[in-house]
Image 1 (cartoon, one colour):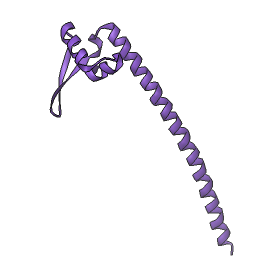
Image 2 (cartoon, helix red, strand yellow):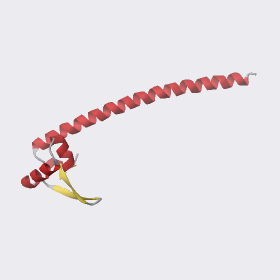
Image 3 (cartoon, rainbow, N blue to C red):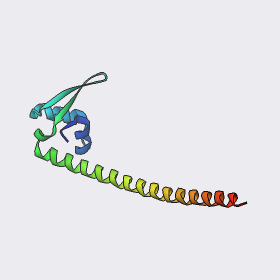
Image 4 (cartoon, one colour):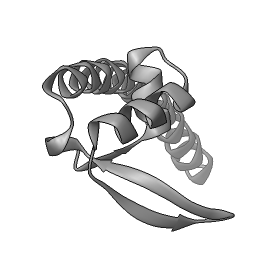
Length: 103
């Protein structure tokens, strides 16, 4: 993670974006202005945020990644099960096809 938005920080700290913007301005958090639809968005430099904010963001990101990886694992298990079922169905169809050719 190299940069984060005020929204991401606000979610992690359970604060409003306006509070995050005020704190960032007061404490002089460095940011990069990124053009987005409708204007610009501040992307705060993660490595230069206060340590407490970094720690909270890191924990929030870790929890999100863990939840997403659990969901991906569940999806992979489902896909493997479906592939096994399809393999069985294909094998059955091939056996039927071979049996029909014996006539």
